[in-house]
Length: 47
Image (cartoon, rainbow, N blue to C red; front, side):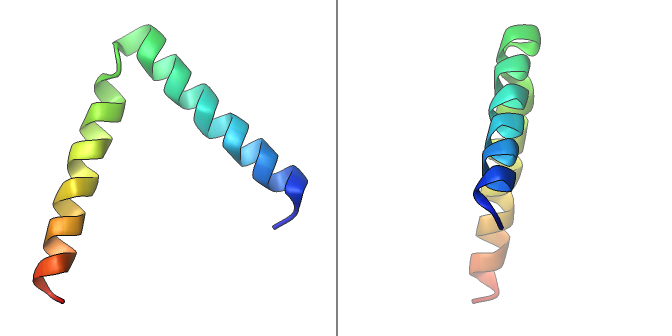
């Protein structure tokens, strides 16, 4: 991955987070964080 691609992806993710907080009050980010915690817990079970 080149620096240009990494910078573009970082800005895209940052822009999505800012848009989520500005428009929806962070509900999408909270939903994804909860689902990520569920997946981590599920994977820890199979460890």
